[in-house]
Length: 455
Image (cartoon, rainbow, N blue to C red; front, side, top):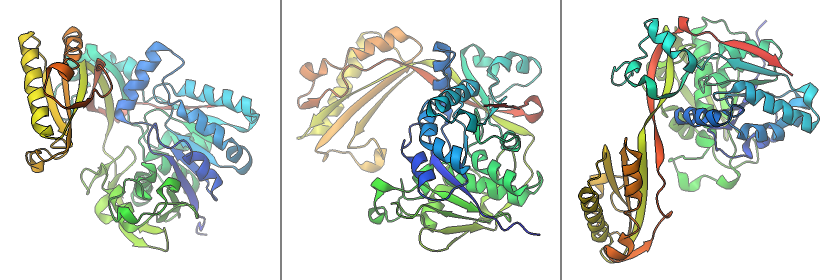
């Protein structure tokens, strides 16, 4: 007998810092079975690792605790399940914080949390290198050993399998570290429909559904270029929902009464986001073929997605590594009409000459003229007709003291540089540590995940 159910997976966060109201609105706005919350990006992992260094109880996306507080009634009384990668580099501490919050809300016995670990390989790097895993930079080919002493965090992108295992063990909230964004949607569909681990077409469909949902309202009217002036009520934008069937087809929609728009163009724009090779979108679970995707309008704010095909995954997992790469500072001044661009260009020449006379040397000095040439560069022309220009200059280098000295050379231009400064935006620049990204591959056999249940 065929499975005719429809499983509804709602997206409630597209990144750490997304709309705090979205999770509650998703579970209160209409029927949903699962709420997926995506918090992690490459830079997020390094930020969380630095937080954990300062406090071992930190290292997770703290916004998640507030999100859970807003959806506890739906989880405890209506059976909505929540899947989130909010655990960052400390999923155990994240789960503990959720339980503490559940106690305060009086639902402690009704929240069963599956905690997925194993993605964090920071403590295993030396052993992995010694075992012959070079963790070479995917862009340059350089071995990780060349920057080993600067490594800040290292996390493997894990797939949907451990999330499925947590759901099979009765979890109604699943917290992971660095899972793939797509796994947060793929896992509940695998669990509900019992898709086989080699059913490549259905698994690929789950990945595509996850890819469409992973950026929140970006597929339901937010950040949408197509007819953007006509998208209704963005202040009340509805976040997307995937209504999935067992055959792998699904409909992208949103709750009635919400703003925004779900259309073939809006879904298409999200599909090409971070797509890479359209013939081979690689994930730990399956390789999805984006050229097979078929989209069709299926009613107001409804897009049907079907026809998706997939292939077996590769033997590798991607590793997101962050490392310390020196220091930077960025400062700015705003110059007004007339001749705003010429004033900003003169300020740039004066400042660079002063830095040179001070003997300050940097790995990079970069200037932008916002309002004239910053966004499109040479395509913008000479920018001389701009009524105002924000002059931004940044430096980066290994020597913190030199970068600190740079920050003291911008303010004097207000009185001893070109005329027409209208604002010293942000005050004296702040020296920041640079965290750089190192993508690598690792044999799947070197990684094992585990699932624990806490309640």
